[in-house]
Length: 357
Ligand code: IPM
Ligand code: MG
Image (tube, rainbow, N blue to C red; front, side):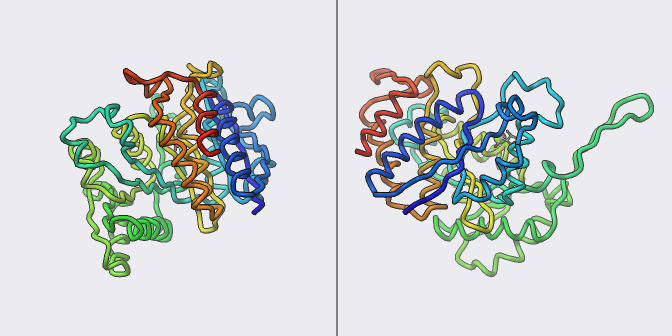
């Protein structure tokens, strides 16, 4: 098969981990007889430097015309003080909205080889950790009106968190359908004891439940969910939640399973074209030093093969290569443990490529 993939190399450690992911994709293409055509789509701080905007129109057009898009990470202190209207993050939000990617899937799974990196007590870890956060991605406070004004001699600001019925319905559907493919349990997280947007959220989710009689549905307030995730993460299968709550809970989830450098995520809309990225940031402090862990990025490429490019076998080959590489004892600095061999970003990528063979 021939597939076109939009490549967003990003900022900080972005370019170096992307180089490794592309090497892995090339190895998969060679092994399975595919052709991947990579099309550069600059976005983030580097795009601000080169084009004056975080998401040039041509980059969005490239992403929309490709079969899927692969993103590393964007942002950094260099752009922290620029005009907020063109911050690197604006590029990411515009890309999500422009590609109509309303569903963000963030799996949190304990990798057995790394269970010692989990900060929770062993008796909690032993129960198993394998859940998936389904986060609404283009609504809520992120996309409501943002306003700052002056009133009676002081500043005031608001960000409106609004949801329309159809926005809740489509993300809840992704939650239910994902739960059907997993362990058929869904926890909808909201703040319905306080927020109107959450009351509507809960009402719609409940209305849809009869369509999925096999899914065991429950609701949880977000503060309690933050606590339960640490107390006993084994109780969760699929967590479906709105944008801001999902942003917060998915960072918490990543820490629960050990290294934030290991987890991929997928952003999807109604079509098959998605945006795949590791969940970590651009780590500017270690950029360009060959210290980054490329595994989250490489697993994002695997996720892309599975969900957008109809290549499940190829995806499994990557995942297996990652597992075998970890089993062989190689570790980047962030997941280093006693008795293991410490390697850099490049060597880790090369080892995974070799395992694919
Ligand atoms: C994420 C990030 C983004 C978000 C930032 C970079 C805008 O934290 O993907 O979780 O808040 O969605
Ligand atoms: Mg986040």
